[in-house]
Image (cartoon, rainbow, N blue to C red; front, side, top):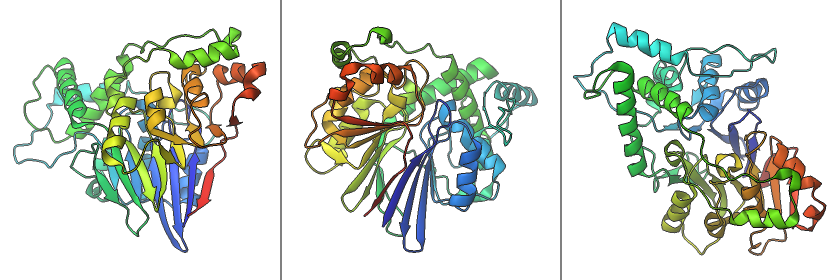
Length: 388
């Protein structure tokens, strides 16, 4: 079997694909899309033939979900085999009620506040559009039919059709999803001045919109700063021991999963919390630690608090992929240091792949001692492909 892993630069967020091929049989996995750029749209249409066998939406966060909403808008005939997406998607009861006209108008105004950042064919970013992923799914009966009602939580396993391997869910925990649901009910009261005591017909859309807006109002998580202009080998190594701050609730609810096939493993971490993933791997994966992966997609774009020494001791790889991020803090010098300076676990060196450059990388490479570290840097974001 041929396995190909590819990431696209879609701004600050993620857009990941795994293409599996056995002779003429294919299986396509898509994970998130923060901004639907032309090359992504072309890839789905031409390379994948408008077919996604498994679509994974890691969490309700604009830099992971906005491009998927626009993809469904732009490709209404997209074939989707299964959707994994933790939203307020549940079987409708007989006493399901509708929003009042006043509440519908309020919801439409709220939707207009969500930035989608869609890049059009001429390369320009469009104005905000009142669209949500759950709304698009629910308006298409074929897509709704493959969106499971059961929450996606750590410990779930799914065998892929056609004997293309399996995935093991490592995050989130049900307890965190419950806390997020309580936050949704608080936001419902704040925005609609009513208790969410009964089921609404469009709960999925309401849940997504309220939590996406709530997430944008959260106070920036504290990140320990490093003076990049004075970065030295000593300060770089020392930054690996920087205190790690707690991961936010939306990110604790991010889906992270392990793809497995005949001893090969790919670890896709979304924006998940390292403690949840490490505990789940010890609980649900057989073998001795560290579990060696074919590749690891680093959590939360390499933020300083989402990759810890503990998780590197549980899972390691020759290939680390950093996706998205921003100009100053992601990927962070702390996460880069923790990975680069960690014990090699039998590896000769590690290869770090980036699809978006930032100041940290520029200053790190300018450090004279950087060549002393056992690692290779790939700034061209080369696709990963192996024959299994």
